[in-house]
Structures are given as structure tokens and as C-alpha cells.
Image 1: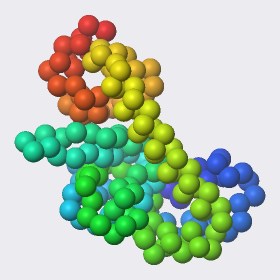
Image 2: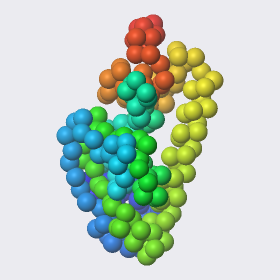
Image 3: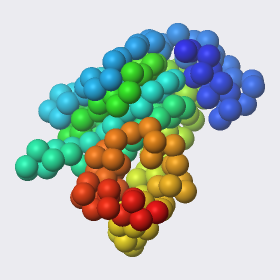
Length: 189
């Protein structure tokens, strides 16, 4: 499992990464069954996760306890509630496994230590932040301007494996579409 993270970091920073083993030693491999919460609203986020295998949902509940999905995170990407993780304040989002998942977790202490002592880790963190921000802004701006049908087409083009990997209810939540409307529109494609 740790080899997946090693290759992920090398891909971003190059073959000559000083202290790579030191960084990797701060990550704890964990295996989590399907439909388990890694974080619930109101808790303090204590980990950043790298998804070696599996799928996670980042979401909030509205006032009627309906889920609104901000992200569906799959292999080779990072997941956390960064505001809570960085500030120590209560999380506003939930993180749950959609599939059985193999994760590599780093806690706040290890994360801060790596930020202070391994310059390349700071680079990786900045890339995580930039990618997360860019993906969120792109998705929000794109979805505001697209019809429900065009959102489905966008997902089929940009993240085609999700259509067969996760439930229609989850995809509808991610696309901001009522699940019945999603099913009806999907049948037209």
C-alpha cells in the first residue's frame, strides 16, 4: 500500500526526493470497510488520507438530512476536511467510505513535523491544496452553467468510471440533481 504513495510523490516531485522514507514512515496504513465514517460533522479532523484503493464521499447534510456531496475521492488522491484539520475547529463536512478502502493516514503531529523538516512535503501539501481548490471552483462554476443533462454528460466525460462504480443516488447528490431526475435523464443517454 505504501508503494502507491511512494510512486504518487515521486511522480509529483521527481526521482530524487530527499527524506522520502522519512515522510512515508509518518503514514499509517488503514483498511476500512464500506459505509464507515472517517469523520462526522462536529468532530475535529485529525487526519489527511491518501486513497491507495477504494472510494470516499465528502458531504454535508442539509436541514432535512439530505446529503449534498462535495466530492467523490478515488485512488491516487488525497482526502481531508482541511479547514478543520488546519484550525482544530469542528468539521462542517462528513467523510465516509463508499467502498472497502485502503488508506494511508497522517495525523496532525506527523503532518506538522513533515512540513517543518522536509521541504518537499510542503510542496506536496501545496499541490494538494491547489488541486482541491481548483477542482472545487471548476466543478462549482461548471455546474452553475450546465443543465442537469449536461452535468451528467460532463461526468461521463471527466469521470466515466464513477457511473458504474457508485450508486445513482450518490452521483445525483454529487451533480446536484434530484435522484429521480438523474435516473430519467440517464436513461435518455
